[in-house]
Each structure stands twice: as C-alpha cells, then as structure tokens.
Length: 243
Image (cartoon, rainbow, N blue to C red; front, side):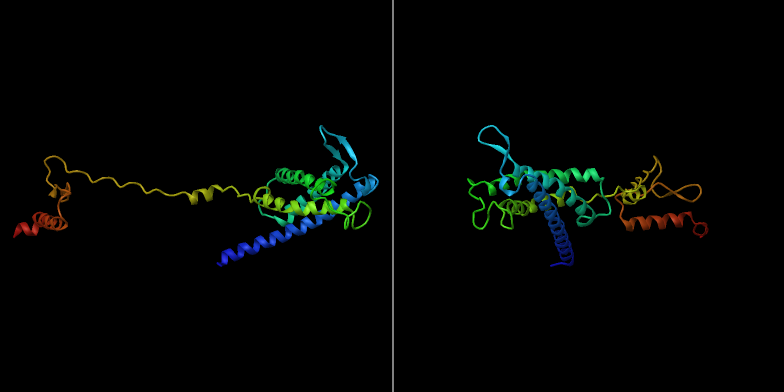
C-alpha cells in the first residue's frame, strides 16, 4: 500500500468515525424527541393511533408523526455538527446552500425510514418486532423505542455516503489573476521563414559593404555552405586581392 493510499484511507476512517459519533449524538436527540412526543400522546400503547385516514386500507398513524418530529430536530443537530467538525473544510458554501442538500438527503432516508418503522410496529408485517422480547408497554422493551432506534441505524449509511460526496463536497477556490497568468501556457512564436534570394543575386554574392546578400539554396549541403563562405571571404579580402 502506497503512502498516499494509506493517508487517504486513514482520513476516510477518521471521518467515518466522526460521522458515527455525530450520528450517535443525533440518535440520542431523536430518542429524546420520540420519548417526549410519545408521552404527550399517552404512552407507547397509543403509538399506533390513527391520526388521518388515507384512501384504501392505509392510514397515517401517530408513530409516523413521531418519526418525522424526531428526524427534523435530529437532522438540524447533525447538520451543524457535521458541517463544523466531521466535514470541516477551509472553503465552504453558505449555510443554507449546504443545509438544503443535507435536509433533502435526510428526508429521503426518513421517507424510507417511515416504511421501516411502520413495518416493525405493525402486527401484520413480516418484520414485526415480536413479543417477547418486545412489548407495547413502558420500559426498555418498548417496541416503539426499539423500532425508532433500528430504523435510525438502518438509514445511517445512506446519509453518510450521499452527504460525503454531495452535501459537504470541497469547494475549489477561484484562481486569482496571478495564478491564472502563471498557469497559462506560453506558445512560442513561429520563426519567420528564410528570405529567398532576390532576382539576379546569386546566393553568397557580396554586397557593396562586404556583407552577403541572399542565402544558399536549401539543397546545398553543410560542406558546400562552408566552402562557398570561404570562397566569398577570400574574394572579398583586400589582402587576397593584393596577392
């Protein structure tokens, strides 16, 4: 395992542990809300009381309202802790810009959670929590509380994965003008083509001031170039002319 892979895996595990700690605190908040709402309704024996009749054989029961109430309070609690601790980043979006994705993810998980909790507390369901060990009375064996806890645990992985890759994704800071200039790729200017010799001027012919005008043809070899340059230099040298 490479060092980079090991560091990345360690960071992911640390983040997952933090998410679990936050989720655990959220479970406590959720269960406190559940307890308060259940007691306000007369206890766990009334947990399946019908609140609203729906078309067909369906009905909205009080246990669903308890689940929604617990979700709303715990969702806000978890969001703030995850934003400031679990997924802490140097660059963040606005509070509302991150809250709504978190809320939507939680709401989708909560919608699935309602189905799970109702199935756990409905006597006609194949996954109904049996008696024993669970019952509809007060105490640690109360079916309503255990159904709430089991549902929270079942939906937690969905929340973690989606929030990690969507809600709390890192925000790349916009590059400054200097950074953009540094990152720009300099394209070298094209070198101009060699000037072709003028009409009537042979390549390598000396001009009036002793310089050469024109260039050798492209098909001359380097050896021919050297010989021609030497010949021209000798022809234009005053000492050679005197000899």
